[in-house]
Image (cartoon, rainbow, N blue to C red; front, side):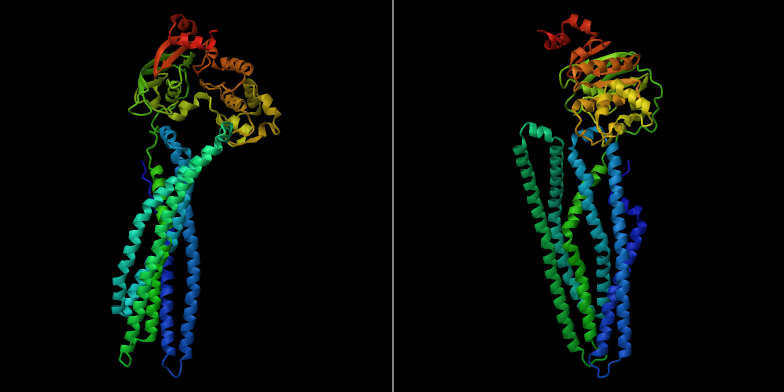
Length: 578
């Protein structure tokens, strides 16, 4: 599996990085040449009765030209740095979405959606800001430090040595504070994700919140999370803000010492063969200021860097998660008979909490298999295993003699139609939601599917009919109408194998009976699995599997199970006995 890190993304845009560094070198060179020219101009003026205006104007033109070229280079470098940062941000988000689609369902189920959302949106934004600051200031800063200290040694190695000896103090202070702030920004990033998760959950479930008058409790919980975010953000910002004034104090000391030692040297070398001129002192002071400026710039954005590093840890933790097992070499399932064999299957969501143990079952072609049992017995888990949303821990599940672990997931799921109790709609038109599994469907096929699913009437009552736009929660559609749309998808696709998991739980009894007749036609000669709590809907099933604690404890048709007077008998009587 590919290992994701920031270096791999930078490597992709090495040419932008190269030009950014090249321009940084040119910018620093021009910034360093200007003080040198200014120093020469000062020496032309000071201590001379007749000023050489020709040479002076020459220096002034060079200074002006260098300044203009420097501005243009900085502008181009800014464009390149923005492009580099935004390209990397775009690629990370694309890879994050692709990764989420390849992650095992176990990871999605065990992590709050808001946390994952925060990784892809907020954390990448923070990383982008940090990258932009890094590209804009880091390259120029490092080259400036190296360039200024080199030129200072050429002009006066004694004064340059003083600067070098004091510099580690500034670095020590910055590192000491940075080491504290990184852990605090990590906590801040985690808490921000928790807050995003809570807000996303509350917005999606606002009707439930209001129905149970839970507004006050939610406000208190949000306030508690918000206060924790405030506390950790304040601590992180406080410590990171110490860096800039601390380094500025050290840098001010450096500047003062250069000024002091330089002034003494100017006085001491007056009249000598190689005097240390006022122009040289001006150049040194300018270089000392330029030398310390990168430390100030970097320390002023240290909080952004630390925040970006903390966010990058969370982003790449997501990107480096293990993916679903590859099925590139698996076979395609083209034609399906619908014969299932479940052989000695063991499965658990959590390792130390077994659920399905030594599960065996043979299902003939065209069988209608009903699965009943108390909540948590493993009914939906069995469906998850048949669809390969989860893989078995041990044993095998075969369809038409082919182990489903050796079949591509796409071809397996293309042959299985599934309607769940929990509806899923996407933002788009009614037509787009219906044709989700068959995008090339004709208008006649769509209308026929709607009539079979008994959704045609309510769709035609909508303002724009099939072109009515809805969002992912269905907008003003009722739960029953949303479930009818999901059933319409199946009627349109007409899959070889059908899975119904409480597919009509939100639909009125009269409509349910009509839909059941349509399902019976669809299921004719096709293998079907029906998960139901209402036993009246599965009395005509060929096989009824009664599950409890992950195991089949009874199986047979409706009459056979009633004669046994076992678990199913008691379950049935609890619903229908007077």
